[in-house]
Image (cartoon, rainbow, N blue to C red; front, side, top):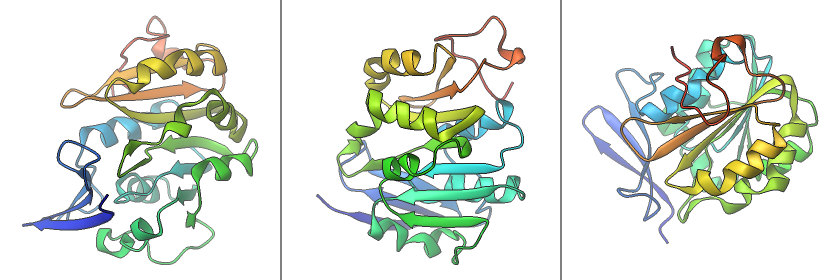
Length: 222
């Protein structure tokens, strides 16, 4: 399979993985507004701020085109952001998407499997964002009970896990997530695609979600 590559169309630059989605596009940046979230699923994932408003530490599994990483970097200036990306080829493209070039105490991109990042950081992250795909699609080991336990253990008390699922995979994972996070789960179906975004909290869901718990499709931006 073809590895990651770029395409440019006017003001837009996109990241592709050959054959892994309908059109192979995994991220797009508008050069005139490089910090904007172009895809609706990333806008929904950014709704984690309704669950955890002032995260001190954000863990991200999957760098891609860096849309969420840049969003968090700008929106949460007091947060530490750690990104795990397993593909060196993806990391090598970071400059094309205006992702901060140099790692420092506030922002770092680690060449490693995201599951390994979680296992090394117990009770560390206030927010964990999982948006990890490769040429074959969604990474299957990121949909296991063991992985969800790692996520739960890596979150601080009251922390929020956000996962991007594409297609119907979330259905087979829901029971495992529900059991691990004790039912503190909200699902949101993207309006313009087959992505389902899952919010799971390590503790009770926030009060603004009263009456819309479990498998309800609550909009985190409302």
